Length: 220
Image (tube, helix red, strand yellow):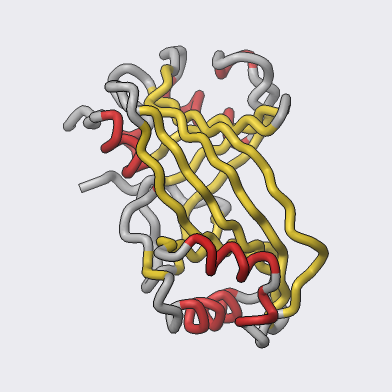
């Protein structure tokens, strides 16, 4: 059983596995066509991301229920610390999320001060970090309004390079509550769950990526 991370700021998001990429791509481009209950905000945008997940050699962050991620978009590096354990029912989950500037290298002591950096240093001390796995993502995003809330829809095409040189790929739809009420995200879940081309994501991106590269956490 994974350890439970401490409380703190949380992300609230809906995660679904995509069974028909073309259909969900069309949904992001024009959500109101199949979801008349939502109102698109602005246009769709495509971003290319590289996500590296980090831990110490003896899985010190995992031992307290945390994982560190450095996300690179163009030349910008962003540090995120998340809890491994997600709370919530259905496909909507809540979990700890702390963010900060990742600086120019992977040495936490050199990163600019932030809540994410402080949590890492509190946990690992002076132990160095190493890369568990790297995910490449092509993300088609669009903001929508539903009820009193703004929600970011993201169609994620994910790729992980395996040790044998082959690549594991899959597609997910995420809906993250940016502002407003969690009840509106629940309502959106109800609308999306009616579709035959979406099913709840039962495994996180990190878990799928680690399985692809054959990484097993140290048991404590």
